[in-house]
Length: 510
Image 1 (cartoon, rainbow, N blue to C red):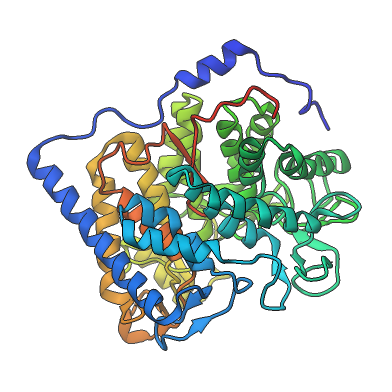
Image 2: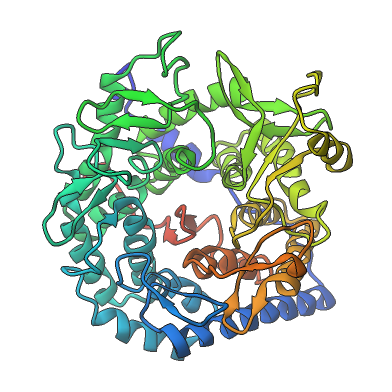
């Protein structure tokens, strides 16, 4: 495992990291600014409430609501994904009656049965288990922990494979595993490496190491079974291919990137290390190795002189990106502050500028799902005429121009607001929120937008996933609350936006 298992952090190292402050201490005071913040927070809260009331009226307890037709939808096992994903946001917003009503509904959920369809293990973890753990930590209601544990105990069946790497899908009734495309043993990087945060915390709360061990086993196997070798899918140390065979632990294919299928694997390396009180040194070692490769092969300057994140390894870069990658500036800035590394924070800032640019340059103030860029110095002869025109106009071209209320750009701007105390970042988020209200709000909540270049007139998409309540609204709201509300010095956010307390001690054992 290339030495990752050997470095046990010394106490003086842990103490040094613990002293590093994440949040800024120079937030601007003044009654007029405080009043503006409060009014903005109230406006976001009211928007959340309008959407929540529609969900409660037409689809309460369902996974989602179609905001255009008002139909309840079963998309995540039928256990109420929106209900559970939204719990901590409701609590943070101080909506006491709504929280009590939701808690009563959660109490009655039986995770032994679902809608009869295979369940996606990764989504079950980040939306359900993460949401329940966070609700428990914020409210101290042990019912939430009991439900999280009950679900996790069932979900451990998905880790019953020759390597311990989980299936992508599993059948709640039979325990049988599969991949999303059928009986193959394929899974992707994000969907094997996004349990570590939730399972570590669940082991802390229960005192049972089984969950933490299951998640850490994934690292054991991929490090033991794969050595970086030029000319193979895994060519650069720390830049992991997307696809892996769960029976062998071997990487198969998929050029490394920070977008969908990979993103939260890297996110959880640094965040699990931080949540462990800096005890899980291997997570930091893996993060540092990955970051080195990311800087060299993934980050690229575009023709507009901004820094972008593409898809790349030692064989070259594909200059295409998606909105998922926009989580990375925020996570990278968090890492920089945790490690007291100003160079990392500056790199994160440069990446943030290109992510925000995909939103700010649109007339809607909302960015696309996918976009492409032209690496600085490259010839544009392979681009379509329309792509060339958009690069000249925006600095990038739109590949998939729709918007599904995804939170990643807002999330990273939120981190920079809290890390720097600079009010311009809150203003950026307010601008985006105005665009969302103008273009996406409907009677049933908030719909997707078919083309961010056109706006509402270009058509809406009848989709409102649970992350709208768990992440998008939470980061919008926290950008305008007082900075001590869910401080980054006190909490680590999961990939689904669920805050976990940093103050729970860990001495290396459960």
